[in-house]
Image (cartoon, rainbow, N blue to C red; front, side, top):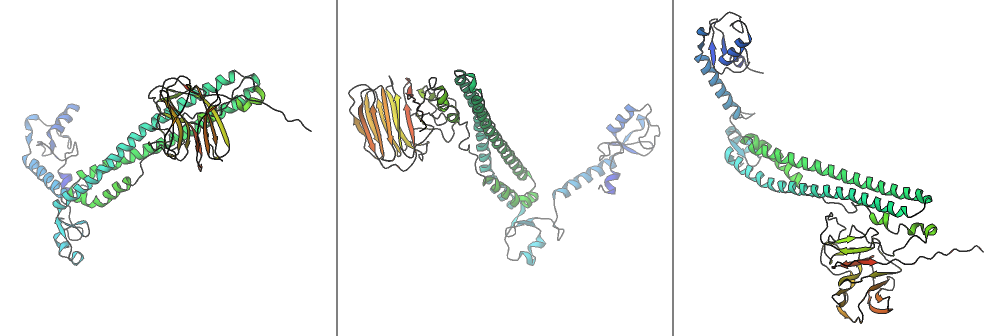
Length: 465
């Protein structure tokens, strides 16, 4: 509440401390500007308090009141900037380093602060502001990381929508080649795609909302800390510990990362789509033993709509998710891995001069150049080699230019063989005791496409005995 003195020093019109007070013939005082505004709105020139008629010639500056108001404002500003000790009503001029709080000279000599260390309040404030400023910088950097992550999350969310639209179109195109009685199957697959799209889009939306909240919280922390740094020394020191704890708590938060599995599982929807209904439409469908996973494809590669052809076209605008291969010579993996049994697939290399085929262990990180867990043969302008970490690099003797390569994996016997199906010629065999899942591996550094060839489908019906 305002004191009695402050009320007496307030203009009856603006209710603020007098600025340029004038005294009327009735002895009342009013701010000059307030009086002129008052008279412009009234028909008569009268006192705002007693309504007595006045004359402009009778207005005189009230210097005594003006000086009193200025003194009051100066004393009020001074007293508001100097806080007093709650115990001794003395000015807080010292800072106790042991208790980390401002104190007065009486506190310094008290038993509570015996043998404690003290600093002048301004010196302590400078030191603590410097410490808090240094702590603030990592928080600002963390904010930048979060903002950068949000950009990637936004791009990934858009890519999910694009994937969903493209996948939907491809599904519809394949179903157009089938008869109308497959409408129920088509709707079931589209529903599965929409459900996954909704789930993953909702998951991404929630993660983006969480990230937005974290960014907002970090921004609030930065602003609050900067406000603390601008505060008066005593106020700053009182809140210093809490400010440091607030900053450190924010710094402990983990940086946002795009989670694995964020993208649409395109291979699940498109892979071997026709084969799943082969018993009804065997003459209209084809089956590929390997479906390539576009979520693992290097940014330089483009896959066909059927996910069986890969072409090198230069950098594509796709999210760099954890599944995507960053190096490994512009590669892509099959959508399914093998940890038992025998598996075979043919790859048409055609006119490509730079390619690589084999298998890659599922435990290998896709972000480095490490070669362990990769067994492959590669061709570079006519020279063929077999390369792996468990076997020395071997130059392969190939008499004719290869057009197709057959890859045979016998996981249980630990053999990976390559042959030319056109001439039925063996090329190379790796022998190794496999212990992890293996993914088909295809690499291209040339414009001609590499194609996983389909296999013939045979249907046999077991007769009842």
